[in-house]
Image (cartoon, rainbow, N blue to C red; front, side, top):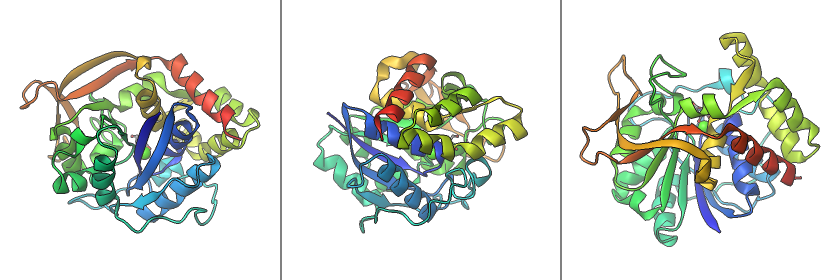
Length: 309
Ligand code: BDR
Ligand code: CA
């Protein structure tokens, strides 16, 4: 059984990622940590609670983390996810109460308690991980693997020309994480757009499954579907966090990757850009996913939505 710790700024796609992790027969979510990003921190925590509730794992502890980036003001993405981050479904207060321990110290503690066995999946800005690394610089070596949804290694961003949202929101935190020792995989916006597209028809099929998870996934993606059509002229939307979860659960769906260093842009124009580079102390520090199997992703996601009722 793979033990998962999931750090999330729970918007609509994070929510589906949480469902997939909960549904996987070979995985167990041991904790969820929340961070400000797609939505402010308390909304992210509420949304994590609802996601775990729908997934039928209400006993998973939720630890609240940082309410904004290390040095910059918080920028959210409610125009993409809905004012509540979950497609304007307005579920109300969380059905799960959070823990009292801070997410950063929980990450440090849980990494040691699970003795190198747990997989850390980061689905939001990397602020909690950076704070935890300030406490324990070897933190990522105490996980078997850290899978990060973030970055645009092809320099085609979703929030600026070059940058992807999670890294752009807190680039100083991201730089600390990519510089930290430990096994890291980066699942960037490029992978979401190529291998995790959801067409109108596929979204309708989510609801037609007739399960609680299928309806939830359909409903929480209402705003992102509209946003992609109206603002980008797309007849699909992408699911970045779910494909990161899918790759963490089943790395065999990756069809092309590359181990190389990542340098994060901190200046104005390059803010949040993720430059692949050999010019780092450890030139193979991060595995960039370049391509993944779209059919395998879709099959894994629909299997999860079918299983959770
Ligand atoms: C990332 O930003 C959010 O919209 C998603 O949840 C994902 O974490 C994609 O850029
Ligand atoms: Ca996210």
